[in-house]
Amino acid sequence: MKILVTIKQVPDTATQVKIAADGKTIDPTGITWIVSPYDEFAVEEALRIKEKRGQGEVVAVSLGPDRVKEALRSCLAMGCDRAIHLNDPAWAAADTLVTARALAKVIEQESAQLVLCGRQAIDDDMGAVTAQLAELLGWPCAYWIMEETIDADAKSVRAARQVEGGLEVFDLPLPAVLAAQKGLNEPRYPTLKGIMGAKKKEIKDLKASDLGGAVEPPQLSVVGLQALPPRPPGRIIQGDVPTAVKELVRSLREDAKAI
Amino acid sequence: MPGAFWCIVEDDRNGSPKKVMAEVIGEAARLAPGRVEAVWLTDKASEAGLKQLGEWGAARVLLLENAAFAPYRSEVWVASAAELAGKESPQAILAPVTSRQREFVARLAARLGVGLAADSVGFALEGDKLVATRPVYAGKLLSKVTWAKAPWVATLRPNVFRPAASQPGKTASVERPTVTAAGALMKFVERREEVSTGLPELTEAETVISGGRGMKGPENYVILEDLGRVIGAAVGASRAAVDAGWRPHRFQIGQTGRTISPKLYLGFGVSGAIQHLAGMRTSKVIVAINKDPEAPIFKIADYGIVADLFEVVPELTKEFKKLLEK
Image: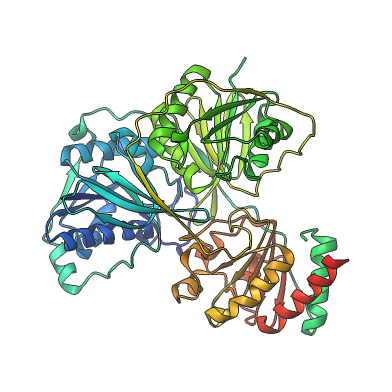
């Protein structure tokens, strides 16, 4: 079976982000880029499905500028068979829906039977593309999955999704879209052999024109980015533990009115 | 007259809206007074639940009651909600951030061909536009976004918006529009309940206690749970503690866990790594207890005590008990 994994390249959590001169995007200078952590759970799960079934193909797909090749390369090093890079300035202002439309076309072209995504990308935390892909394709989808099993003849997938207070288990007919939650698996590190092998694997570039042309305008636009308002300075409460705790409880009650 | 502000009802799966709906309705009423409508997809709504929506300030409740709506499946909900939206033309569709609402409104926005602002922490009307504020880049920046056309679809982070006060006697007109509830693809197999700690759910709790690496081991969380019972707090953990296997992942606070925004956050032995801050920095009051005076969490804490948490927690439990028994 053919599994497609959508990935996004994002700034490393620990990296400093600065607002660019346009006031709407971040300054790319000095940023360390990584594959969004939830997407690594999706890649890992796809590889495990292929390994378990002893056959199939795992294709990593990403939309973004030239630097995204590096993220796709690391997915290939983990074990994906090939990659597709949606690389066109026409997508520069893509919102989740524009992104989902482009990815949905690739999924149709590739005739994938299963699509795995990360729960959300850790840059804009929108968490929408999975559901929007499902809508555009007319497929079922399950969010925040903690486990999955494909049935023997690859007609359906049983997935457990995390909800408040428990897990809900569903059978989804294939093709379907699943969003990986942390806890689904422990992503592997690429081996040296994997890294070397990745250099020979194909990363296909696609332009908007390869997917049927015109890109619709985004429905959601960024008006501006701003720094967080600073929190008022805090106070370290001094004294021995019983005294400090008494003062903390008094402050929370009387000053902060938090309890 | 401009269209209504829909508030998608998140319920307790037992016929009653969750408390977070007071926040969604309260914010909708602030933005669009008199135009607040609750839209409720459920298998069974209770009379008390319908009454509550009216008391919070919904002028109208559109109740879509059908066995096919439980348990939630995106393909069924979206088809019905989109059909209703086609007839009603709402100006905005708001929902609280919960696992299913995040998926539902994203899919609904795609069906309607409109934008979505997920996990918003603020809204402002600017002329005929709505501008939403959302934390991005691990909460290091705020992004202001706006929609190209209506309906404006958004989810609201719990505990951030001022809840509507309940006004006894205020009622909503309850309508039961007919929509088709078909097209189910997914088949429900089972629900596995978590072992209940008897404490509030992390994302909904007004007070959250978090234990980090300083807890030293899984056996020590019992002291945090004791404290939690005294003050009615949820107990979570940092990634370090979850990755060490001390707590299940569902208790993780931070970038690869739950995002919380309680009125009071108490961190014990939590260093305050950026990815933890990403999940709790919009908390209103932050308290940090850590032996290490250099721990980054003290930089954003409102109150800090530099001490051994194992001395502080029992003392704190005792003092809170005294205070709350008064």
